[in-house]
Image (cartoon, rainbow, N blue to C red; front, top):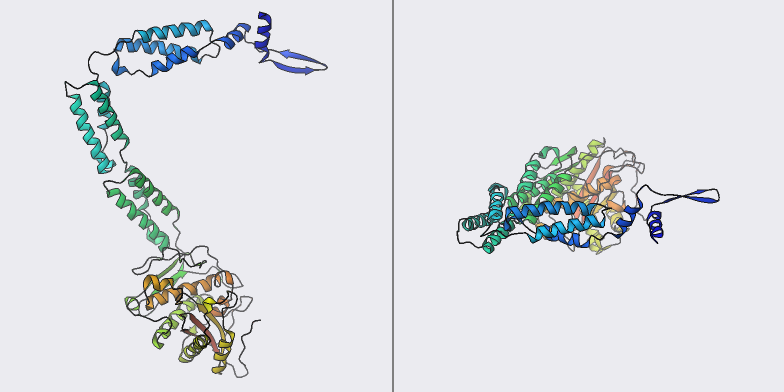
Length: 495
């Protein structure tokens, strides 16, 4: 029977090698007796006593008995960790540990050693590293704990309670060190190296972090979130690109990134919309109306006179329409100059023809914004206006709905004034130039820059721009050129 048991114990670690038609059993080198004992030794009581011994703390027991227990506990742990300890070894370690536990003697009187250790740890904290409220709570518990230390009549229950309160106050300290470190690193970045919008996001995160830093009752979650926002803002900093800037005599200024290569049919395509914050406007980088593909860096700052000039987007005055036309032409001419194209001009005739286009739309009750995306233009209105001005050819029309009376995000946010009108106009013109009107590809870029279908420059001696709004508040940007002696007007068709 013993022989069978030995075989069962050893075969578990044997290696079977197939040789021809037979099999060879190769056993490991451990002894049979070890295998039998390893399989039959019972450590359950030893493990229970080890756990019991580990729960005892030195402050409540005499040094002699506690030290004796530690010796027995260490020996018991060594036996428990031996994979092949015999039952004799296990029983001996169990008895030794049990005897040590039986001989444990409690301290006479109250033991304040643990409380003093906790006081020593709590006293090392620096007030500048934590919020005032959390540090004040720790100081209050320190004062109370020192009182217990100095109280000759303090009970062990009072000591234990003080230990718990002091440790808890330390755990609830709100550390400002990570935030102060992150703020220090964030302030090293220079505005001149990054786009205005991305740097503004960093400044906002820095300002929020500073507010948390001086908040006496900030939570650790507040601090951690501020650190997270700072790291995110640093990670999204965008290096400044070379930009084109146009400033009107009134002081209103627009700047946006230069084109990489707009000729030969290539386009610059951007995937995010970014506005910088100025005194009046802050679109927080999101236009909220589905418009996408604007430059990474678009900076608009209005003059105070434009802010203070009210408008009716569905009925601009002649002087307001002329000012907006010159603003639009000034923007577009920055790009035309970059690619070697002649500048757009604005005159009375171009303004009158744009006004005729807008009037025709109004008379036909044609709101381009409400029309299908693929057919927003009123061809009959365009052809009628073109025929009315027989000395010119109406080359094209671009429409912007940023001031549409039925969906005017800008006016609802910033009021009906010339600054709002120019911001909306600037936003859409940049979209048209950079991404050809977003997903629609309506050839705005070709029209405004005088490019043919292959992206080559169309050379004309003079090209004019006119601008007006219809009764719905939609912008109509019309480009025209004087007819040559042998040239006839074109017609707008669906082809």
